[in-house]
Length: 308
Image (cartoon, rainbow, N blue to C red; front, side, top):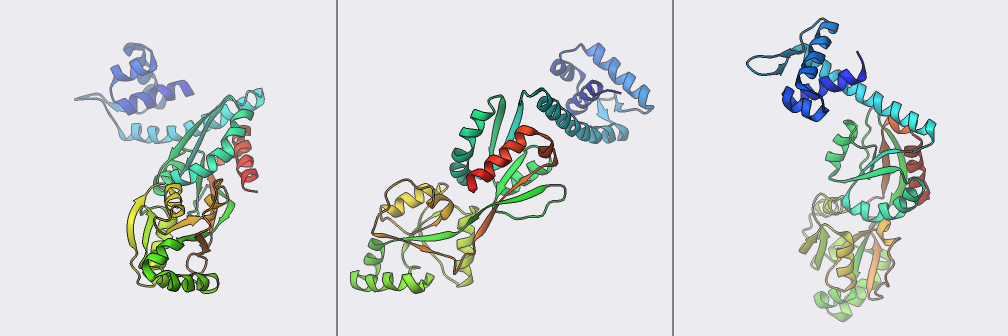
């Protein structure tokens, strides 16, 4: 048995249609059918039921499951051979949230792509549960996240300690409490900020499911507080820009604050939320195969360098 025959088998087992499989493999139906019969003869088991329509036997399903291991082995072999040839040719698959991607990718990818022009980069910006499944099924190489699961067979390294801030325009407090009372509250915030002091104010927050939004919601629920949300968005920069324009209060991560290049509004206070939301540790998760690939190891080093 060889890798090519396994590739033929997997295509037939996936398509369950000899005509479609032969078209995908660019060989004749007769030749493909002959390869499948020879494979059954070599293994001494029947892999397919051929009537009333093509389907897998128990042995066929067992072999199809086993071919996943061959795929991983092939990927490792190809990575090592590419490294030996010094071509640095391959595919890099990165998973992270859309929000974090806006900050992380511009820091890491331009210098990496310049150093590895023959590496094709694929970005998956999806929810955490989806990216974890992709990692487990070897559909991505790296997952950057603030989630902190322990996953058997997957490596994890810390990247960045992330803190959260409440962004409060003076104008909002003035409109709620009056200018004099608002001034007193602002002075108090510097030493003793309380969520109760701002709960009546309008908020612009990220949509539920975003990490900072979920942490903030947890902090509010713990104190039985309900915010006055006037707008929700998927983009943290949008929320911060609206707060800078004194439209509403928002929550912002220092990961984005450190990278903010605009001019900060002096009438907008940025106050640590550490009293209510503990700092997060951003991690990178990666598969065992990444340790055997030079260009994937190089990406891991680029991540650490960007966050150092």
